[in-house]
Length: 205
Image (cartoon, rainbow, N blue to C red):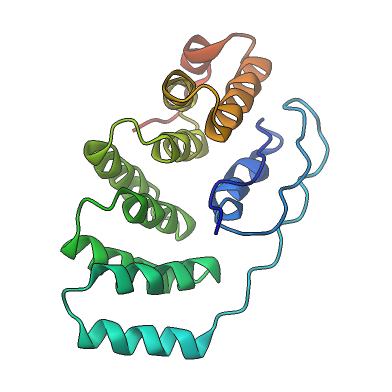
């Protein structure tokens, strides 16, 4: 599964595209067409989630109960719920996996995204901080940190996160998305990069 294969467009008007990337990046559906940061066009509809494979979920739950020290099976189960957009069910399994293997940065960031989608924004940011404590250069974590900060109207913080993505992995898909975010901040606030974010910051950590 390609968890990074979607394009995001960024502006205040198109905020739905920004948060949509968090979920859409986990799906196998083709990415939506890119949107200019300042356009007022509506965001393309998100693809429907795959139906929850109830039998597989039940099998993984049985395996998890039989193997209390197996972090991988818990991540598999959490991912299954995540992909079906059952974030409420994914959260406890990501938490259980991380209680066994706290160094799994991908699971940690997926947990943060699950918190975000269940309106636990501060917990989402705190979990991203844990991901970055494990790997400060993890570009998926940094990209999502910027998206969540933008959702809190912390434009300065969003810019700082996205600038790190560009600096660490300038040729990556994450950097391309981060540049779109930075362009959106620039067009929305009349300045560039972190300076634009400083003028537009409203919330923050």
